[in-house]
Length: 523
Image (cartoon, rainbow, N blue to C red; front, side, top):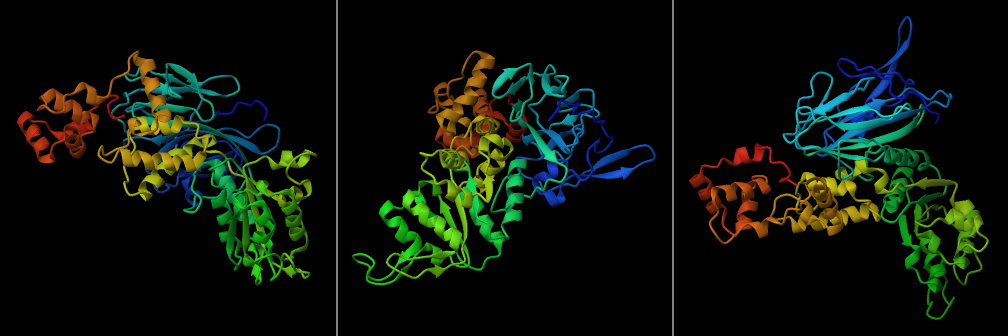
């Protein structure tokens, strides 16, 4: 896309307005559920065509309460594509209204009380005027600048007074976390809303669901590619669910089948085909007749079985081992792999047949890795926590650690991390960095050390838990646990009633502790 002035966008009095191609979705806070999202419609005026952004509030989510949405003009090359940028608020202790703020030529102020036209944070740790979003270069980029805040700003886990914003940049202001995103959107591009079966509000996942909706009703073979743990099996199940096929959804992990049994597993056998074959047994293709067969890790199939799989895809018939008769089957094949089978198919010495790849790749569906859609990390973590036995909230520090981690094993790794953290944090009442694996917790500890020059030792090493605490010690521990009386009692190894007695003796109001501006302690 050529370099064009991206963000010459006037700030509207109520919703913000933007110039863009009619019918292009403005991917703001409402894109969590696209049918109720924000869209622009063209209104003809005597001298110009202006697209006005009308906000329709979508259901609130725990970690995506609002977004700053910045939109650009269409590219001048006539391609009809549009660069959509947003600085999305993904975590905040408050619950601001779902809304969009347009950014014009001047800077946009973010803070607890940013003034007219600014973006307000319901966050007691944020300064009244915390940061500004300003233009960064002639091509229309943006940067965030500290506006003299008392807590400073962290950009990708490091203290900064000014930093450019790039796709995936994580910004922390007080206890609030924002992610900067850039997407190119075509004027006629289809995007599909989040579903319970396939979660993710990101543009990348909306595109995946839109692709599924297009290809699912047809019998075309689908090849799903993506890294380990991105959710390829869920995508395959969603294709079958939307296909309308009445038959079964049958799955097989090709990597788990021994080479000498793969043919029998897929195509079945007749009696006497080999030693021990006393009767007829249908294979997975026949079991999936009228439905869908999902071949997970298809790249692991041995070459001999690949050749026979190609024959089934070509003829629509299977021949059981030992049989001279072919059996017609009506099976939709969906395959998945984490390997680069396209490159292997082009390599004469590659392990994957080029003709089989050509058959399977009639529709290739790429599932993006989690590190490329950071805005999905906290909603997914929230969903995993709510589904578990201990649905605990995330502290700001834990949420930041999750956003900064590269997630090499993707959604599967995220699920295991938050489930383990919930078990370790059961007594604390909230998941904090120390409950996460060291690789994640170290990211926010390093950020804090870089800003202060020191690293605070654990609270357990600073306080004698066997002695009766002083008023100052009790307040410090209560602040550390966010006013959670049960967690304070667990820390001292006492009953909650004892903590209440101490509070009465020292005249400590727990409500004031919860509402106080506690600096970094809530992490």
